[in-house]
Every structure is written in C-alpha cells, then in structure tokens.
Length: 584
Image (tube, rainbow, N blue to C red):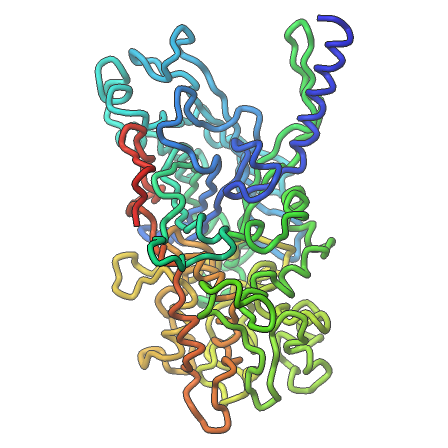
C-alpha cells in the first residue's frame, strides 16, 4: 500500500480505538456502546444463593439482544476485553476490595468450513482465564485456567447429531460449570436473557402498560440470549475483613457489599505491515453497570457515555450526575403540573406534593425542597438527616427533594436509622420517629452499584410469600400484615429482594417506577397526599393503592429460572425461536 494509504488506515484505526474508550453499557442504552456489543454489560445481579445460604451469587451479563439464530458467526465473549466483577465491602477504604477478572481466548478448530460446528469441531471456540484480586487490584492470582465456554445452542444437527458434536446440549452447558482453586463455583457462557421488560412500550415515550386497545404489552427480551458470567462465592470470602464469622443480626453492616461490573479495552492498538500487533495502551473502562436502568432511564442521553467512562468511586468526587437523581426526569411524567397528561400509562403513579405530617406538608415534586424544609430543626437530631450523623450526605440543599430516597437507593444504600425505618410503630404523622427496623445495606462509598446485606436470609423461591416486588412487598407486609406488626426487627419475606441486592426474579422496572413515584417515602411514613392525618384515617389510601397496583404487564421472565447454579436458563436454540409471534 502507498504511504498515504497506510497513514489513512492508521488514522482510521486510531479513531476507532479512541472512540471506544468512552462507551456505555446495558441493553444498548447509550450511543457509543451500541457500536460495541461484545463489551456491552447488560445486567448485574447479586443475591444470597437460594439453595446455599452460606454463599452469594454474582452475575454479570454481556452482549445484548442476541438472536439465537444469528449465524454463521455466533456470539461469544471478546478476546481483547477484560470483563470484571467488582466487590466493595468496606466504605472506609477507597475502591474495590475484591475483583474477579475474566479474559477469553478464541480458536477456530476447523477453518476450512463456514459452519460454526461440523464433525465434532467447533469454530469461534472460547476458553477463559479467571483471576482474583483481594487487595484492591494491586495483585491478581489465577483461579481458573482454560475454563470451558459451552458452544452456542445452534440446533439439533450441530449439537446432538453425529455430524455435529454428538452431545446433549444441557450436559455440555452444565459441564462448563467449574470450581475455582479458591472454592468459588464459576460459569461463563451463553444463556437466556434473564431480564424482562417491555422495551418497546417503555421507550415509546413511556407507553407501559401499553394504552392502545389492541396493543399488547410484551417482553421485548423474550427469546433473546446474552452471555453470562456467574460466580458463587462463600460469604466468608466477601464479608468485611476482620468481621465476625457470623452476622450479629440481619442488619449487620459488616456483611454489606457493593457489586458492579465492567468491561475494559486497551486505549490504542497498532497494526504493522509485517503482521505485528502491539497493544501499547492501558486498559480503559468502556462499560459499567450496577443498579439496573440507571443509564437507561435516569441519565440523559448527553451524559450517558460520560457515565460509563467513570467508576462508581469517581461519582463520589464528581457530583455532576447527582442532579438527575435529586430531580429525576421520570418524575415529570408522574406530575400533573408537568407532563403527566402526555404519559397516560403512568396515571397510577403520582408523587407526594403535600404529604401530611405533624411537621407540615412536604412536597417532593421536582424543584421542591422536600425534607430540606426541616434543616436546622431539632426534629432531625439523631436521624440519618442530622449533620452530626452523616453530614449533608442525604440532605444536601434546597431544590433537591429526592436526595432522601432516590439518590441513596442508587448511591449509598439505606441505613438503619430514622427516618429509614418502617412506619409501623411510628406515631401518626411523625416519619422521623424510630419505627420498625427494616433494612441496612448502607455503604456510603461512592456511586452506582448494587448493595446487598448478605446477612439477610434468602426467601425460598417456591414459597407462597415469594414476590418479584422485593423490598416493596416486604414493606407492605411489614406495614399491613398482623404477623409482622410488632415494632421489633423481624425477617420479613423478600427482604432479600431488590434493591437489597437483585434477584433474577425481581421486577426491577416496576419497582424503580414505583420508587420514583415515592413508594419508599410512603413506607417510612411520608404518606400520599390523600392521607387524612387529622381524621386518623388509614394510610392505605387510593393513591397508595394505585402505586402498589401499577404494573407494566410484563412481570416475569419468558422461561423459568433454574433452581441450581448458575440459576439462569439455558440459551434459546436457534432453530426454535419465533420472533414473529411474541409471547404475551
């Protein structure tokens, strides 16, 4: 090639390398990551393992919306990407304490064919190395070598027949589960996408549930696959260093962890004419995820790529994104003073604008002051909103009404301090009084991540009390069920649910929309506007019931989850899906 052409190619390579540095994550929710699906982190889950409560399962999914029939080059993990699952268990120490790092190698066992699988040979076959750091990323040790990634579930001739792998696919998939040298159970491979949501409705300007007479709400991720990393880790490995072997209670703060995942690429790759390839740049984060739907539905499009270029700990120092949680855009579509009339699907969701309390009516609508109207008042003494307890962390200033509920849900977790205790046991109209202890997953270490208190036992998935509404349902039981009406701490079913971690079954879209609509405020005694405080009426008002009854009409996954590790369902088969006939 001419010198000019070589320079042009070099510039093009540099352009793509640089643009990949600031990419986003989660189901194509940011502009740049849509161009780099292998590095796109779609979801993160963290839960106490239901069949082994001495362990916690961490799951990170990548490569969104895979067509099971998407051949001939079927999906797998990228070779030039570091996939990492991060764990923080000590807010007093900056950054992660534990990191699991996956890297992958791919080979073509039979490069003479265009088929992905033929005569026992597999092309684009991936294996992996898993490393673990227990010292904040300073050093890593290898705990799995040559880990098996099961093949894509192409079809019966490719998998079961004699001209394919001559194997049972489920056996291939389960045989890929391995044990690390340090005791963790590990899986890396294709799976059904465990997230369920009406993507089409939600992003059609909030049309969920769909309002058209003949327009049926549907799971936009039904019959799609992802690639899943799953690790089952002993709680003894994850808990805070120096803590007791067993938690003192289900509120033990030494058993709180923060979990997030990322993907990183090298910043520059140089290709030479003689075939040499030199990676002379450091690895740079191009994708991250902790809490679901943060970058999809909270961060505006102009900041999405920036959000994914920083870590949760950067958010502690750079607070430019906080305003989107203090005054969330979604709240505008639940407020009749703004744009609620334009989003009829959200009609049941309304925010407290005159929440009646003995301290006066409190307004949590966008731009209002919320509980900041009490700043300097002695009624805040000894509460989580007291400057002498957590500083100005949860009540930073006027005009930031959701600093007390939405912001901590995503950035700190919830402490076991008033007002964050259930309204059960509180005098009517006094949400700042001590109430029923409920949850403690407080880890004020930075920004967006899943926070899980591992001391909370799992709710059996086959229990009649199990609910995909997670902590929302636990709060309802704690407020209304006679079995949980005492003021003392009790293990209430689903206290192990989102946003105390995230289980596969949790209906996070519905929970987060209810949270934007103020359901957390109501749970602690900041009831809805139609609560008759003076008349001594029940706080279970029509407004509260509307929010609790809200549904997107997509409330569960399209296939059942497994009862054993890695809990996700096996991937859809390419010869069996039918995207022309969506499941209702």
